[in-house]
Length: 143
Image 1 (cartoon, rainbow, N blue to C red):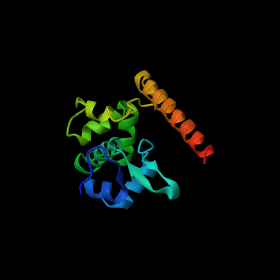
Image 2: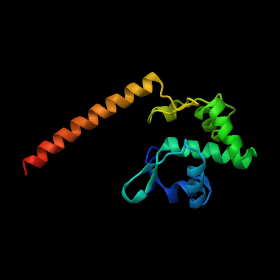
Image 3: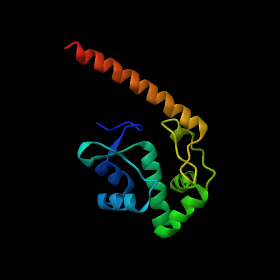
């Protein structure tokens, strides 16, 4: 049974989808601060669709376009994450990223600042999570 396009991927699934070994993904994580997969207990990595898009961009820049690691780091600093993702989409920075941002905020600022809209979505998500936690706490007290 295949996963949907918005499903999280394990490191083995992400590596297979991107055509690189798992250790390469772990290495890139140490070299590129903007690669931040979700980690569960025990350090198990889960890659969101946005993470796969970022990794695809890094792979395209390193392997297809011949950038060095320092070159990709500089590109990210100067032009932002959106440009890195666009490279993975086969575009030079003008690709539409609406499908990726719908699943969550993408940090497109070179300095890591969130756009006001993204910050608002995070605040709403936090409110929802706190409400769910309060409800679960109430259920647990009733046991």
